[in-house]
Image (cartoon, rainbow, N blue to C red; front, side, top):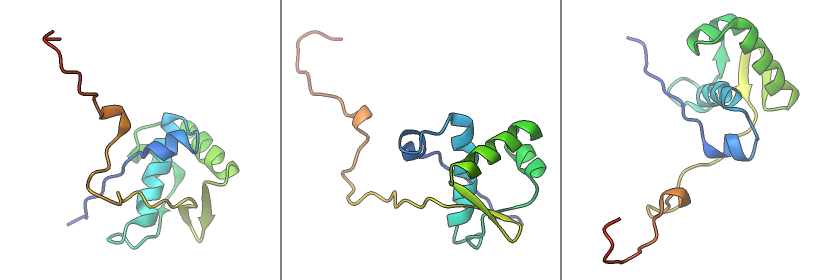
Length: 113
């Protein structure tokens, strides 16, 4: 049975790395494979055409994205594998960490809206 795998586009990929959403999706996928203990931390092993098929995009678009990520130094090729070069610890330091966008101010009022 094949192991299941999911990837997450982290906010730092968009904000700090300034990636477009399509670039962030490709980077997040490679980053997830690069850091997956279960999958051996090897990164993507396969053709760009296969990666395009997995991520439901055209081979030419995938080639452009991979080239941009490599030019920026965010990925590299090593022995047939594509691996991410940026590794960030995104584990919250405490259970009370929340996204500031979702914290609502307590506005006590008699107005129902």
